Structures are given as C-alpha cells and as structure tokens.
Image (cartoon, rainbow, N blue to C red; front, side):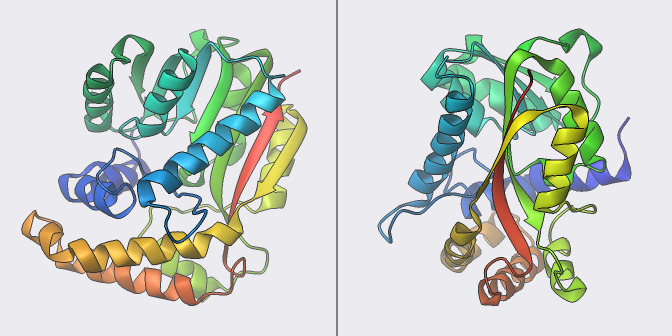
Length: 282
C-alpha cells in the first residue's frame, strides 16, 4: 500500500527534478544517493561514495567469516549504484527493493550497460513489508542511508531478519538523531528530507536486539558528515544554473543550500549522527 509518506519519498528522490538534483549533488553524475568517506581534500565525490560502499561491504564480509555472499537484498536501492558495485565485486545475485518503479527501470537499464544485468532483479514496494516467500533466502541484507525513511524501524529490521538465512548478516549505514538534539535544528533537516521518524544509536541497537540479531556492531562515521555537506554545497554553487535550466526548481536549490549551510555550522554529532550497524542472524 502506497502511503502519503511513500509519495513524499518518491517525490524527493525519483521525480524528474529530484533525481536530477541528487544525481548531481550527491552522485556527481552517478546513480548514487548516499554519503561518502573523504580520505583527503583530493578525494572526489565518486571516490568518496565508493569508499563508504567498500567499507560497508568489508564490515559485512568480516561478519560473514570472509565468505563471499551469493544472494544479497538491497533495501532502498535507488537507481542501483551500490547494487551494481556489489554485483561486480561478488558475482552475487542481488535483489533491489525500491518504492519507485522509475528507479527500478533505471537500475535494470544501467545494470545491462555494466554487464551485470543477469545478476540484478528489482522489486517495487516498501522494505517494511517484504514477500513471505523470501524468508531464509539471503546471505546478506544491505542498505545505505535508507532506513531513516522507515515509519516503523522495528518492523523493517524484523522483515530483514526473517529473509536472512541462519548465519546471514545485515549491514546498513543510516542517518541518526543525536541524543538531546534541539528540535529547531532537527526541523532544518526535515524541511528538505522525507524523514518523519528518527532513531538514535541506542534505539537502532535495541531494535536489532529485539528482532533477534546477535554480535551487533556499531561504527560511528559522524566525523565524515561535515565534509559531505561542504561538497554538496559546493556542487549546488557550481551546478545550480545548469540544474535550474534542466528543470530543478530554484526554491529547491535555495532551501537545500540554506539547510546545508546550517548543517555545516553544527558541531559534529550535536544534531545528526551517521553510523553503521552490523548484525548476525544465528
């Protein structure tokens, strides 16, 4: 069932203007909608986003005992940037869950161009309610900065747990609410993002334990946030006129730029956190 919240997410990321905006401002032209790890000033946006994907996979691989997964579920896959990288690295069959059929179509087309079309399948729907026939099917459940959009985080993590085989692993990065974050500051982020229900590190850890995950790890990436915001703000400044000419509303650019300016000014970890969670289904 498509809810108003789902429609807001699709408008933000999959509308013509939203897709163009995020592809430029977060992906530098690539089909990627997630944050990156900048190792130095010379690190490009494309390199940074691949760094975070690679590091996330390294966490998962270690939890899997260095056994390469053969079946992966990508929750909130967007146009498939991370799924294509995983397919190229592992040769695994990857199922991508995404609310937007437009993103799924793009995902499949790009996968064919990259030579991994035979490894990618897509499913249009919410990651909070996965098909019953998927239970026990996957070696790895994966997600990058998508679970913050879940309206019921516990239900989402329970669905992920159920589709893993025993010995399978869940790994995800997510945007989190800092403890005691000022409400007025949180509103700055919510104004330009379809996020209505936040989790803290403690709440995510509790939810993972509640649904049955064991050997849970948390890795704090909050220190990388500010450089991501700076790079995104620079992209808006550099590409703004081109984006407006291509149909991105000036109000969207102005609101997002203002939000980024405020985020850059925040003390790291005072409002938002960025972190990775890894859990094992025994």
